[in-house]
Length: 340
Image (cartoon, rainbow, N blue to C red):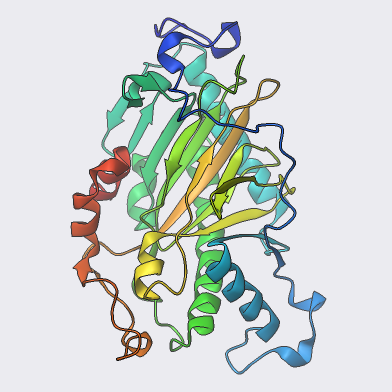
């Protein structure tokens, strides 16, 4: 791949030198099986004991499962979450159409516009090495004020993604409520301070040699929680006890990971999980990622109910916007958030 705007990933027969990571950064054990230890949580109340529903309307078994997964893994998958399959497939289709337009050469190579950021792999660099992916970012809060700033091609993009985000807001609020309940926080603790603030769509083309490169570097999310819809694709990995675990591609499931801000609020009772994306030789991977963040002016600190003489505060209070500004390693994440 030479990097000109007419280059196509599928024409690449070997990994170019500037996409080859150092040996210590390259993925290992790519043939390892999908981990069966990663929690998969069924959110359908009908599949659980109705008598276990508490006064907040939450199933105590669900609260316990989510709490345990958040503490032990910082990561879990949810199924039977209530979002219609058509809403998910429509979103994936329109995102694919967007990336297809870029790869066709009909659009410019990279764009930083008010409202969204589209970047090809040649713009992501670590020690001179590029990531094997295409990427689209845009803010999504307040939703009604952001929609017209998103890509206007394909023509259905704004309508379809807006409908998707409405459902993500409902699901993320439900998950956060149960996480807070598991921590012993009062109902609605994060209701007025959490926003589905950023959407990130990724396209990871087939790679001639996945052992040499990465789709996404190992990192922690600066969010409260992050929801990832993979559409049945593999490639996402999470770190557990020093080992990378392959996340299964469960149809219509969402992967949920605890972000840095929730680790702070929980006074480190919950763990923010390190994760990355590896590439595949035989098929492309596509994902839609939504970051649920505190509002920018919100002060993030350990919840007072979780701090005492035996368990003093592990973190200092900080406004979220200052936290994001300090962590420039988030790259375009910082730019997109500040433009939200």
